[in-house]
Length: 206
Image 1: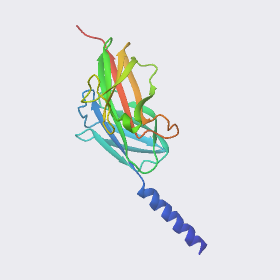
Image 2 (image 1 turned 60 degrees about the horizontal axis):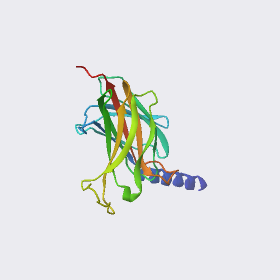
Image 3 (image 1 turned 60 degrees about the vertical axis):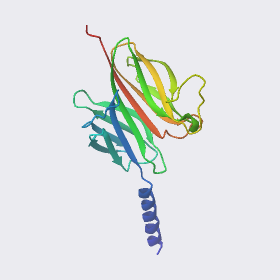
Image 4 (image 1 turned 45 degrees about the vertical axis):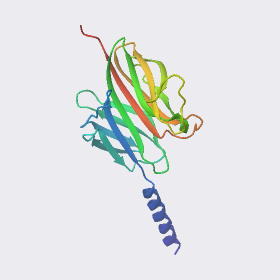
């Protein structure tokens, strides 16, 4: 009888875990936000790995990624060496986790803008979690834009807009920047979404 109770409890726990399992929704675009299909991606977490290709909308959905586990993404477009991104964690609660990847190209000396949807009235904002120290981008500043941005305009509750992060290409090569969307005072909570910006800085050919 005792063994049956233990088995029943384990089954209920497994069913509860399965019912709250979320998905990692990966979307890959270029710097103009044009979807990039057929990008091969591998997600690794807790000793497991999932592989797949983005569809024509640049989207790949990976189900049942373990909650409260750190994971990494390895992806490539087939025309360059694979790019690895670490430092992310899948949140608890069974919610889906959006992860967007932006692949851009900039000429040395030019500025590069990273634009991400945001709604500061909710308390959430984008935070730069880490930047490749060997990269070629230097952070300049950030601003907030809305469709109604104008002198004297006020941010109304519930109104969303775009955070604009400006960088300058001060060197050559590839830089990767990882952003997390979270509330600044919730130090222990993981971001509810991530944005990965990978930028290649090149020489201007005249």
